[in-house]
Image (tube, rainbow, N blue to C red):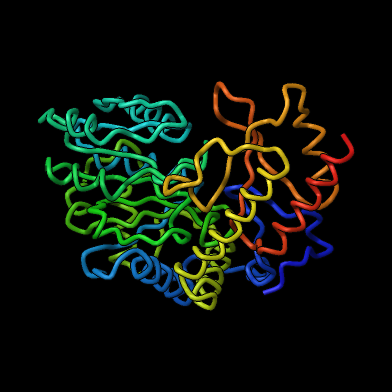
Length: 370
């Protein structure tokens, strides 16, 4: 794979998605496709099977559902379909995307309990266990990789607590699935949600849910929306062999299928995780040497997906820094932590170690000239 910037790509997206994609992924979108065609439906079925195989070795116990829209559409589809009228959901929130789940749950008029933590704090297992003693709670949800900071939440440990209390376990794996090794069965996950434009390295247009069949089958008739009815979408895909209920993003689906093949060619999730990990460690060490301290300690809670850095000085101009990096071929993200002056740099997508090294050279030039 060649990480060189092409003429039609003036810069690399060092963001948590959308992200820079390969030439092959983009080329897969260069023709039109019919949503009703059997060949297309077979492609959808192949995607579904590949996603389940990526998610677990217990493939017979799980199924994949594809949903139009961004990843947040799929999160809302899960919340609005899986929690029954008499249910109660605990949402563990330590960032913007946990907060978004709380907002969705309240808008859907779910009975919701929020366990909130500062954006830089790992959820406390003892406190979670205490809250789970509430027998009215039926479902628990948490974000795996909270890209507000780049933190990896301990979903395996939380999942063990959830199942010890016999609750349904929902994980937003938006920015981790495909880039961080996990087995949904081992993590006790009933519903895992992700998106086409994250670590699989496709383009925006649909999300997907890896769901335990036994739990999904119990969701019939519970959805609070027609378009976001996860059960009906799944049932249609099951019964009609890959057919979507409504118009699907055909170009994006073909691009995603190609991205899945590229993931396989790279060596699967383990190999991709190693590439991300190497890039993140190089990035963190290099930035710290240039005066940018990391917000999250470089330990097991720092994801290989995105890293948050503090401003090096009080008068640091993020906008000037951003424009300098953009002019040299890189786009980064502003900060999202409510009370810290910071910015974020991602390293997922068609980004390689040589790109991170070039970025650090560009940062060093900026630091030398300000």
